Image 1 (cartoon, rainbow, N blue to C red):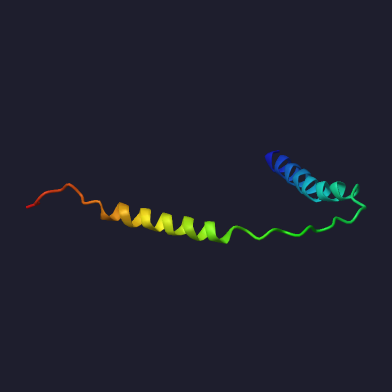
Image 2: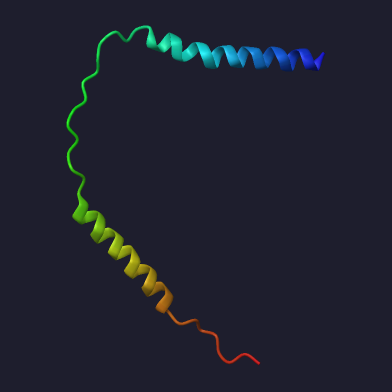
Length: 70
């Protein structure tokens, strides 16, 4: 009995996964135009990368407060 439920559930899930994209595409008859994409802010990305690198180096430079261990 559980095998038939699993099979039915699998078939329903497969039907939904295949039918939903087809139903969603029925209403689209117009061609979507691609707009020009602005250039990303490259300078700010490089500055942010450098800042994160300096923060990582600064975190490594903090000495651990462990004394002499025998």
